[in-house]
Amino acid sequence: AAAHKWNFGAGPAMIPRPVLERAQAEFLNYNHTGVSLMELSHRSEAYENLNNKAQSQLRTLLHIPQNYKIIFMQGGGHTQFAAVVYNLIAWRHQQNKVQHRVNADQETWKNIPVDYIVTGSWSAKAAEEAKRLGANVRVVCDAKKQLGAYKGIPAESTWTTSDPEGALRREDRATGQTPAYLYYCDNETVNGVEFPFVPSMHDPAVPLVCDMSSNILSRPVDVSKFGVIYAGAQKNIGPAGVSVVIVREDLLQTSEAQDGVLPVPLMLDYKTMVKNNSLYNTPPMFAIYMSSLVFDWLLDPKAQKVQDGAYFERELVGVEAAAARNDRKASKLYKALEESRFCRVVVTDPAARSKMNVPFRISAAPKNDPAAVPNKAEDEKMEAAFVAKAEAMGLLQLAGHRSVGGIRASIYNAMTEEGVDVLIAFLKEFESQYR
Ligand code: PMP
Image (tube, rainbow, N blue to C red):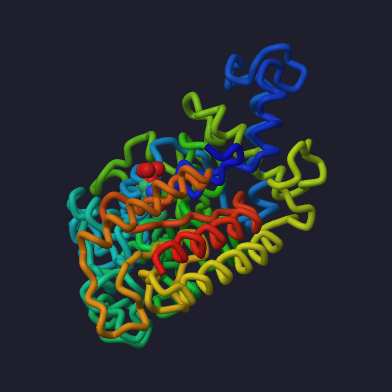
């Protein structure tokens, strides 16, 4: 087996080597406390400093405006599927009451619409969860229905969102039913569909909620366009166990709203989390610590202890530099896949192709031979052989998500250009064996 491993896993994913080395070096004695971070009280000064530092690092990296709060929560992305429903419906109900909307007093939370743009399996799951909780879910864009598969983003003009001039909005005005939020997933980890834009065709009174679990910190983002951004850490931030939530301050007014609609479970309540600086209960300290090391690595790589230059490029400072590198990595990988005779990129719309997760299929029937008939069983065998051979060469976790099969290369911030070059060389080598 190859000594050097390249980890293309979708999450938990590769963590920058210098970060792992630093964690190892600090493991037994955290910041001169004489004990490990895991043995400290979450009420200790050392931990509070870390908690504050991690927040301010993230604020710096993403240029998060002061009217946005940063929260560390547990329960992963799935918990946020529910948390956004509770928090923002409670907020919308309060807004309706304050603005004396028709029937606001008799309102139940099932009357208040919530809008979802569905472009892949994670946004579909989020919409499902909202439905399961009893919310009035309106799918304003369903990519699978419109395109036949999750392989692009339908044009904004086809969405049935509540734009200020549109029919839906007028209907909303008449009934007092402005949606609580408009939800989308910026990067669909399984399907490889990434938004090349921030949805604009929406009512400014409707906060935009975005799942950035698999592309946060991969490129600059204008946070001021969003109501809520959340991300599970285990792809582009650090280890599993913590989720980052960035929420606009004015959306936190939920306490009065809780009578009459649905009370927000304390552990899901953004306001409770903000009021307690993410220290309402015992936080996932280690995951937050590791995230802070990753933030450090992005902010100032020169300060990191580096033993293996292959994992590290000195020009990588800040999200902007990470984005430039991610562009280079993704474009050379997609180019190689396009040029390959056997590989087909799943996402057919080039503009919607993810720079983080690259799903593709392999078929023994060459693309440029119209007479070649693909054989599903043969192709799946070839894909399995690809994954197994890659593994033996030290290219790990290239199998697609179990729900879709195929191949998926995840190339988050931690993946270097060299790693992508190695994958491309392997692809060419694999293909040459089938000539
Ligand atoms: N959203 C996205 C975009 C994801 O990729 C994932 C996990 N792969 C989730 C949500 C769910 O996250 P978790 O497993 O932390 O619940």
